[in-house]
Image (cartoon, rainbow, N blue to C red; front, side, top):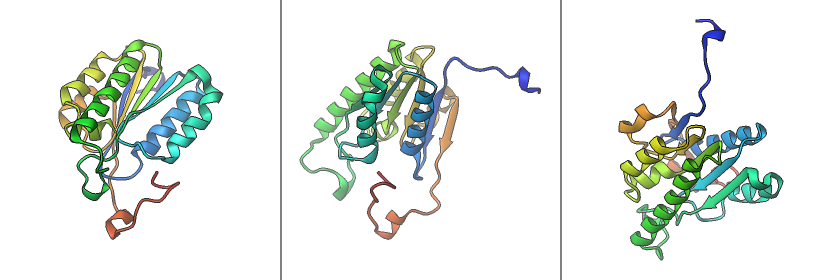
Length: 189
């Protein structure tokens, strides 16, 4: 097939999943590319609530992009992750935070205002039972026709892969966490 026989789509659904590092990093690269093309972008963060590098970076560039970039941080931390879970936050509070964050994501994705909506760590929220697969499917199916959607996090449901345009599985070959090393600022968060 010749290059001129290919077409473009008005929007795509992109998934970055798997147990390897780089899902959030890939979504941030996508955000940079979209902003560079003067797109309106909404970056919505599930799970992470602590001070991570991407939050500081997005906060710092928000004034440069004014109405072109929106950021919503709705997570309450790791859920059901043993010693890594914040002890003072109840399962009900985690679930409510996920619901509130989902509502923001759904509103942004269906509004038609954004060219790209990134839902970072939404797959984890679904896998942890904080959101249902049905809600994730609804987000994908009901997004505005010209809005691209990026969904990150481990364990994207196999049953929904047919609704995506690009799905990348980040496969871990080696990670220092397995050798009892904590995450490094600037590299892991």
